[in-house]
Image 1 (cartoon, rainbow, N blue to C red):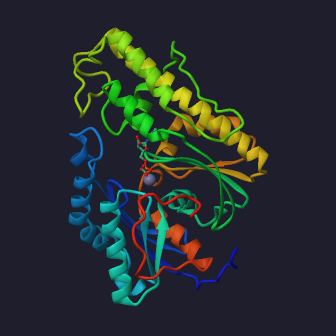
Image 2: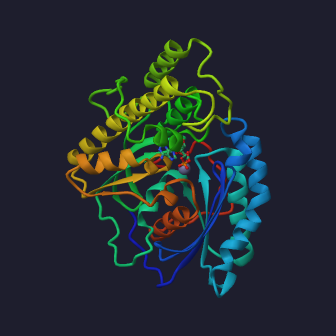
Length: 364
Ligand code: KG4
Ligand code: ZN
């Protein structure tokens, strides 16, 4: 582990994030204070396809990146003069999408003669927990156990220090967010599925119990069996055609032609599915935190926005559970700038040779 390098107070990083379907730029001071955080969502462009189309994402990033950066810079009274380093996500993610943010960051850093830091997207999600609008809040203290749950990943990680990580477990098939998205589609709830399932399940005590893949004696996860179990229930209920009026864009629960029994089936299935995912994620995270003597549990990634996961983890853990505000759980560039700050302090800096790494693991 390298020593921590001191940086002058007020050190300000421009972060860029284009790994998936959000074009984002943010300015963060001292690794924690958000000066600006601009996110251009592409959800409308992908919704009609029921999922993310890589070519559409690449094109949208190219169209949005410059206006998004310009808007982020406007928040700095000293403008570009106030930027001390530039960072961008270089993986994991969609290669065409990553290229836009990475090359833009390199071009800015080269032109302005600034340090350039490539950031691991998964690490960035964890560092959303260092961002705060209130300087009196203490940053997390190591050792920490972090559960990273997003559309593409499900990982349990032990953090001993900044940049010193141990992978404890990960999904063997679908990511948690991917399972939410696929199940939402089966139920005709549309994309993105996580928020739709959470809304449908809100306050519902399900009459169904769905399976949990415990994969005993490991910290690994599996959600494909659960997904298949939902599919079988949907087929039993509706026949092989699936729920009526299922379009890629889906329908809003409580509206449309499906009413009464079918609507309650959607809500019941959503609640049972959510309970199953939350139960497994929570049990393994709490066990890992106890086993490795963590001082806190950090929750990160898009699925960390799930209120049932937040409340159940907080209820079952006998140590503090920290999670970012919902707007910092899903993809954003403030988390990229925060991660870059702490990794730069451990001596990490990249050359112009750094390329995108779509399958970048954590730890690197
Ligand atoms: O981290 P993220 O923005 O993008 C990736 O890096 O993948 O995560 C997106 C994922 C999607 O699968 C979405 O359905 C899920 O996060 N998500 C949720 C919630 N909000 C977003 N899943 C469950 N409950 C939510 N409230
Ligand atoms: Zn993400």
